[in-house]
Length: 271
Image 1 (tube, rainbow, N blue to C red):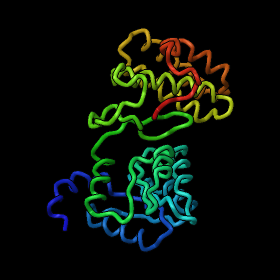
Image 2: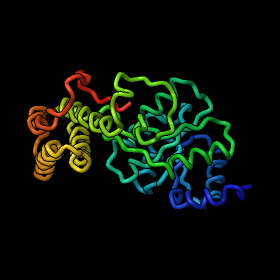
Image 3: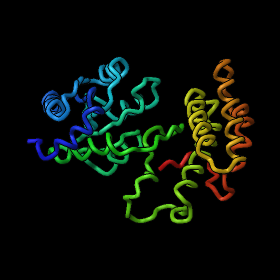
Image 4: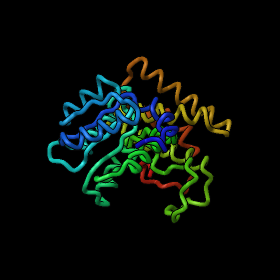
């Protein structure tokens, strides 16, 4: 059954050793579990409720998560959001959302909650293999924001997208400039959220400061990002209170590099 794809499955197998299936439907969870065991001899845990699935995610450290969306017994979108905002080592694990009700609003909601891929039921082995390949063998940048936490929805590094341009900056910025500007916008949004969501604001700012100081080609921005990162790590180490006022002071030199024509609404645009 899998002979034609054996080499592909061999490449994916190391990334599929531990899999969580969050699905209250026993039959569909069992079918998916059997397919994964055939493909990669995966160890599969099934969580039929949000509480059980989250507990498994916390204790078993899955490399991949499947989650059912359209079921009254399990809130798949809430599960994804809680996973992404957790402190667990699997919080960045690829998530494949599954449902038989593949409406446009539901697909967008899953994407915005932090899912990597979407799989419509009933699905073929080819459909499953394609999603598995996408999440195991094709790298996606990670966005550590405040309003959004998950794989980069813009996919600058794809090079495969040939659809219509949707943003004013599309075509006028290089992928590098887009990444830098996105990071700066996330910093700005995190500063604004420091009073209301200090934990995630700190996590978002640390991630962006680290990316900027290691990626920026402008030496001045590199220095500013390094100083920003130093302030953040010092505050985290000494458990200093995270406030918008303090964060704004630390981030000022970094935010000076945000283009003047950038969106001034103060929220990240990691779409």
